[in-house]
Length: 311
Ligand SMILES: [Zn+2]
Image (cartoon, protein in one colour):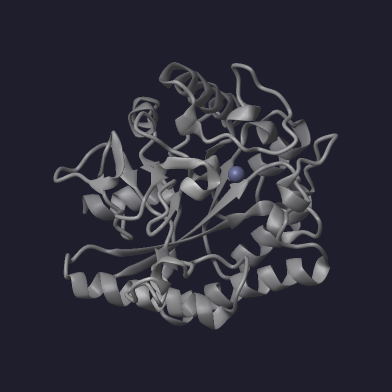
């Protein structure tokens, strides 16, 4: 069974400690983060990342110019932080809204605005989407399908976001491999193929998950270079591949690593205060890409995944 790696990157304006928005808005995460650091790394490993873009990036002429002219293979998709999307767009101190908390019509209009902005920016339809804070709800997937998306990647298996204020965004029961979701219940797989495929972020249960009491407290393990070590990432990848193989579905296996563009430069996210921390995140990412190369795991855009399943 073939194994594939998606590298899906939430892209937004520069933030800082506590995810506070830099003001006036800054875009070093695009010029230095994507252009100078990430894209050359992906080129070196012949990897195809998916950059999921928040609205404010597409309203900045310079950021747009860079994104439209990236050297090498990359997919561009969209990422909704509702504060930055019309109707009622503004520059928030921090992006805290979960889109599942908007009424259906407001969520529809914000997604439509973001999608139209993408089309007018790049002259094509976006194929892939991820919600800011992973905050999709019961309306989101149908709205995305109606707007022509073929992939959503907002589902975070083994997680729920009730601690962050959104018990509606619960994905504890979600499959860890791509599936056609029940549109009004994103963590459930439908029996039938649909127009919109869910490509969940690769997140494994905590090693203590089976142990009563303690299990509830330990953290699930993400395929995410933000923290930890290369060997930790490789463990998560190997475990997911092993589990998917033993499920015996015969389908291709897809790993989906996520992080943010602003994590790879100093001072633009809570995760990298300085150059050393930003460099460590890039090194862990490079370690994961090297593992994929060694194992013959090719990378592909989120929007390419439905083709694998159509074969
Ligand atoms: Zn985001």
